[in-house]
Structures are given as C-alpha cells and as structure tokens.
Amino acid sequence: MDPYKVLGVAPDATDEQIKAAYRDLARKYHPDNYANNPLADLAQEKMKQINEAYDTIQKQRKASQSRQAGGAYQQNQSGTSYQSYQYGSYSQGSASQFADIRRLIMQHRMVEAEELLDGVPAARRSGEWYFLKGNILYNKGWLDEAYRYFSKACQLEPNNREFQTALQQLSWQRGNGRPAGYGYGAYPSRGGSDICDIFSTLICADCCCECMGGDLIRCC
Amino acid sequence: MFGYIKALSPELKVKEQEAYRAVYCGLCKQLGRVYGPFVRLTLSYDFAFLAILAMGIKGEPTTFRQERCVVHPLKRRNICQENESLDLSAAAATILLYHKLKDNLADGGLGERILCMTALPFAQNAYHKAARKVPHLAQVAEEQMARQSALEKEHCSCVDQASEPSAKILEAVLEGLTQDPKQKMVLGRIGYLLGRWVYLMDALDDLEEDMKNDNYNPFRYCPESGESAQEQAVASLYLTIAELIKAYGLLEVKYFDGILSNVFELGLRHSVDQLQQKKKKS
Image 1 (cartoon, rainbow over the protein chains, first blue to last red):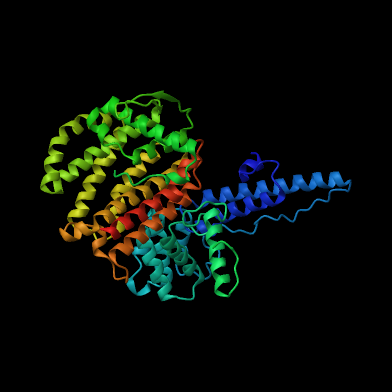
Image 2: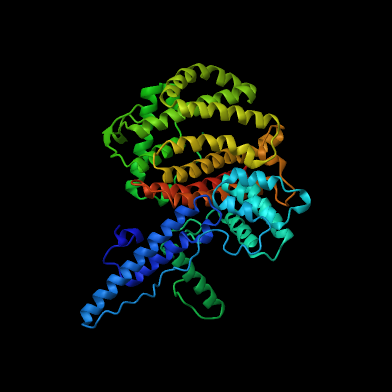
C-alpha cells in the first residue's frame, strides 16, 4: 500500500505536513479511543498501517537525503512513530478478582462473560465487577447503562486508573458529541481561524486599546 | 424514519451537495417507479443517506443524468440513475414506513389514526413488494417492531433497552451492505448505533408532548442522576454520535467519504442542536 495514501498526503508533502497528518491520524486511532470497543482489533490494525507508513516515508526520505549529501546512510532503527502504543484493554490489570471473566471479554465471548458476571453474589460485587459489567454493556451498544456502571465502579474505587479512564471517555463524549482527539471543533472548519474570527479578534483588540486610551483601528 | 440523518450542508463541497441532491432525487423517482406515488411522498433524507452509504461501500459506478421531474417540472436536474443501492434503500424505506403506519394506528391520536387508516392499504401493497425483495429485513423489522410495542406497553424505563429494537433493525439493514466480515462488523456497529440514535431523537422530539398526554417516552423515567430528562436525552444522543464517529473511522468507503463523514461528524450533532433550539423557542 502506498504509504502516502495511508497518511492522506501528497508524495511531495513537506516533512512538517507528513508529521502533522501522522499526528492527527495517531490521535484519531489512539488505543485510548477504542479501549473496550468491539472494533478495537480493527483500530489496532489501522494504527499499525499508519505507523508503518510513517516509518517507511521517514526511511525513504532519510535515505534520499543522505544519498544527496553523499554521506553513508546509517540505518536508524529508532522509529519515531508511536510504537509503544499498547492495544488490548487490560494492560494494567493487576491482581484481578475476575481474571477468567476478563479473559472471556478479551476473546469477545460476551454472552458467557455476562452470565458468569451475573452469577456473582451481590456481596462480592466490587468496583471491578461494575467496571466489567459496564464493559459488556458498552460492547453491546448499551451506552447509557455502561456509563452508569462505570460511574458506580469509580464511586466504589475512586483511585483506580482503569475505571477512571473508561468513565472519563464516556463523560467527555456525553458533553461533546465526538470522541476526544478528533479534530473538529463545534462546527467550524478544520483549518484554524476563519475570517470572522480574525475580524472579531481585531475589533476586540481595538476596544481594549481604546479603553486604555490608545487605538488599534483608527476608523472605529 | 424521520429525516434526522442529514448532512450539515454549508460544510459540503458544491459537488458533494449536488451529488447528495441527485441521490435524493434518484431515490424519489425510484420510490415512485417501484412503490407508487403514495410511498414517494414519504421520501426522507434518512434513506438518501442510506443510499449514499450503500453506494460508497459497494463502490459501483454511479451515473447521473439531467432529467425533469414532476416536482420540479421547469428545470432539468441531475438525477442519480437506478442502481442496486437505490433499490435497497427504497425497499427499506417502504418496509419501515409500513411499520410506522401500523404503529401509529395502534397508539396515535384520533386524527392520526384516521390518516393512517386511509394510508395503510396503499402502504400494504408496497410493503409486500418490498418484503419480497428483502425478505430477511422484513422479518427482522416484523420481530423487532413487535418487541418495541411490547417494551412500550410495559413502560420500559431503560433507555438502552427501549432503543434496542430500532437499533437491531438498522443493524440488519447495514450489515446487508457487505460480504466482507470485518466491514460487516463495523457496519453492524454503525447500524446499531444509528438505529438507537434515531429512536432517541424521536423520543426527545416528542418528550414534552408525551409528558403532557401521559404517553410512553423512554426519557420520562430518568434514573436518580441529577440531570433533567432533556439533559439526559441530549447527553445520550451525543454519546451515541461520538461512538458512531469512532466506528465510521474504521469503515472503508470507496466513494462519498466527504458526504458521509460530514453526516457523522457534523450533521448528526447539528440535528440534535437544532431540535434543542426548536424546543427553546416553543
């Protein structure tokens, strides 16, 4: 696959443009965005493609640069892409109370996982229990219930990072209507400020200057 | 459905706008041609979106031709020519229209019931035709609509459960658009969430009226959280949109990515905000 196509840039794009495109895509397909998601495997594949494309371009460009400079190209394996991104939801699952259920969830065997989870007596339902139940609900698309269960998990164990991350993600989405890390603002264009922004900023600046006795725009 | 799934048109390119409209017109003609003038009248943007999604995934070449039509007799317009995606979208629209009429007949007001009674025979004929074309979809719709009315009768207080029948129907529609197992997974998730979103939009739209008339509405039975019913509805819709955007990011589309990403990333949220503004005014 053409690495430039993967990153969505033209082959003659500058290094800066490529870096920016890579950064946007990496943010979009970041494992945090797809944690516990039924589509996490696909997102991981996508992330791998993006990383490979970025590395390929970097290598090609370095090679051609060193050829032009006449120097020997030193193989530089220290990839600059986000290789360290870990997919798989339960990286920090320390001593888990429900290791077997976590394994089922990882294997996408949700029905069995839910059955086992529902069989846990009320007295043993810890923060982790609520978190795992929230996960199963989230997978089915039962988003409101998932949010409720994640909240409960955090209430019971407020210091657990794993539960917090899950809850924060959904809270953010409830307030913003888009995943964290996506480029779109309210509705304006992707390309930073538009002409209206610039004018209103200028007029604001003018008003401020006038308050202080100066003037930025003479005519108003 | 209800016409909530729309692009935010000022953000579309001119050529995208034109293609979008041409598909809308093409669907209108398709509905008239296959299912008759009555079904044609119920055309909505939801199914134009479905047709565009189907074309974008299949990647079959879409042809546009300048034609006149009854609605705009004076001007020739670009109209998308008949293809598999339009055909499927028209069939889905007809099946869901029939169920909506039946649903309204069962629990609408008097005026609504009379209207549905007159319309139902026309829809019935069209429905049978569509059901022959996509029997699997007709069956899913039948089952899920029965499930939905059962849930509404028992005053289901769980928003997720109440929206599930609607979600399952669109899940079936979208899964039918591809054979590729990975894409099927993505489309299934998108379909589920989109069906859920449409159902919840409709619930938010009717919230005040349902409260006044003491009708069922999933948001009336809010859990103990401090949010009002409307706040909860908007948060739930936003949450669904965010999940949709993530799923769409993993879909491989060959055409119309500009239009489709506009719908997911801007259009859906704009519909929610528009609805809120309408409520504030009234």
